[in-house]
Length: 228
Image (cartoon, rainbow, N blue to C red; front, side, top):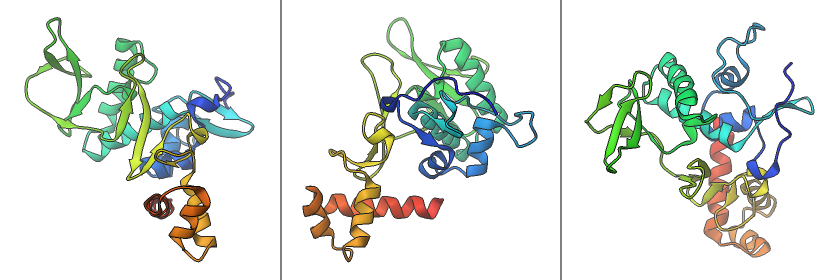
């Protein structure tokens, strides 16, 4: 069992493997192998390296780790092969000097290749294959929507608008999904809704949020329960 790399920082979010699987809609066995390797003791299959690792006998990851898994899952869902995802992640870590290259808002795909989007010296968009550096001139599919990036400093993902009216922000509630514009978690609102005869107006009044916020929270929690 590997030791943790860094002590979790609540402002960067703390997530378990099951959280990543539910939020990113990737099978839990796949997420586990991406972070911990297959259960053969040789760590084969590992793609990602948690910022935290084992903490208090539990394997946990950061918000950036979560987004890495989300992007890897989106690439796979669009048809990109696992060897291509692995190679791109490794090449980009070295090329960009970034532990979390998939957390940058710079990728496109055609379902086979991972394309790195950059600006050349005169500010024109330059598209290159992330694995072999080949230049491309055609347009490709976007990989992610609803992820907000820090354009002022790091360029990395810093908030995920995961569903309508629901966000995952590592600075709010340790990264638990919350109703947008509030610090109230969807878990709390959904449970209150069930405990109060499914009365959205009553729950909205109890927590000072709109009835739409309650319904969005309930819908989100139902969707991730279904995905678990």
